[in-house]
Every structure is written in structure tokens, then in C-alpha cells.
Length: 152
Image (cartoon, rainbow, N blue to C red; front, side, top):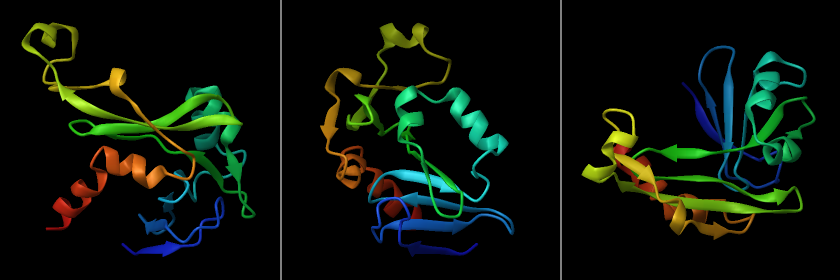
């Protein structure tokens, strides 16, 4: 399917990755601002209602609707054996990105986790990044190393 970079309707940057995943659906993921959407995420749609029902208040507060009525939410990126990037804050005026690395679960801890899970997120050592530094947060969990490995 087709992939390209577009100008982000949320931040205006040129690092918004658009991917045609089916004939009807395109997804968008902006590496500049960290917001994501798709053509099924339109104002008043069931996917948006479902997202609103399960999202933390901060994600709801930061939701953005573009000129095409497409709804954008902050992304949460989870790479089970690498780490996670997510929003951390108390209000739409006071937040930043957080990045945590995945660490191996010890033998003593294995009984506390689902069978087969080998890593957990190291929440005690979270690193914080400013709103404009989403790419740096992704880099902190080695997100781009995964992309490079997949292309090799």
C-alpha cells in the first residue's frame, strides 16, 4: 500500500507519515507532534466514541479535530521488549512526553506477569521530553532501530 509524508494538520510540520492501509482507510502518524489519526476517526464516529470511552482524561483534553472532521489523539507507542512513549501530565497546559525502557522480568517476578511475558516497563526511570520532542522520546526507546531492522 502507498506510504508518504504529508504536512501535519495538527502541528504543521512535514514529518506526518500517511499510509494507505486499505482501499477505504488511511492512517496518519506525526513524528513531529506525536498525534495520530485515520480516515475512520471522524467526528461522531464509533471508533472515536470507543477511543473517548477508554482514554485517560488528558488524551481527551488534547484531542484535535482537523478541517476534514478527522479526529487526532496523542499517540502511545509500545514496543514490548524495547519500551514505551506516552503522555505524562495533569492538564492540557501541563504535560510532556515520557519514555520508559523495557527491562527483563526476573525469575522471582515471573509469577506476577502473564505467561510468556519477558519484559516490563521501567516506570521508575522514566525520562521526560518537551511537547516538541516526540522524536527524541521515540529515540530514547530505540524506536528507529526497530524500523531500520525491519527494512533490512
